[in-house]
Image (cartoon, rainbow, N blue to C red):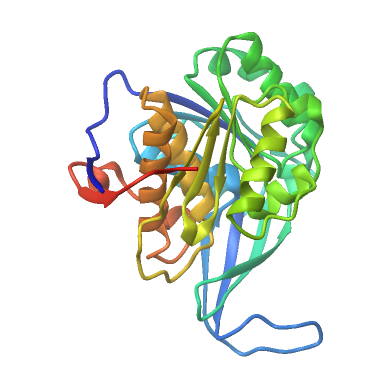
Length: 322
């Protein structure tokens, strides 16, 4: 057991570019999730800014990074609100495009009494964020310390963004969510792959049900060409595979109220810590801490912690080699 101190942000600020989705979340808190054909009475309703890309961008900005967000919104109220909220977080929104035909993305989320969330997404303008629209952001990507990607915009766009980063010598982090099979060509551009259990299962062909299967799946993904795998395992923490070094970073025990954006917060925090030149194990520890704070709060972007909440806090953790 060791004590870890979260250090203050180093200067200059790490530069993170995030390419991904923006959405407005419509959230219902209910005792349980409905099964097909069932009506469940909700207890509370609220809206909150979301979208995996935007969530990760906000997290990185709150943790001290200079963030540029690449995305596409609709020419509507939700889109205008998203831009305003991102600007209030200090995020560079100059490369967010507006679609004149499709609405902004929305997500319908149910959170049950055990803080588990399920969601249905209508991507809207996110689905029209096309690869040929990326070159305008070439300079922003070239100057980045990390490029952070997900799979809720078209894969051709994700691949093109990854290629731009690799050509500029910028490391690429891919959160393969929503979970579906993506090309080996894309994986070969990736420096850090951050699947959850579902994503790891889909990409590896191994059903991740416990630590042994998680290790097996991580090995398969590593052999596909990524430089490292950081698999998020919820309450079990994170599995880190880099070269021949395999370790488990434990989660921080908290009383969860809403796990909606835990993975997004983890990814945003991981990117910041790596851009600050921490080791992958140290960065995963930092990210687990950030995610633990987030799940004690309601919402997505609203749950992301600020750096001041993590600075100089001492918490006990240990990393186990396996």
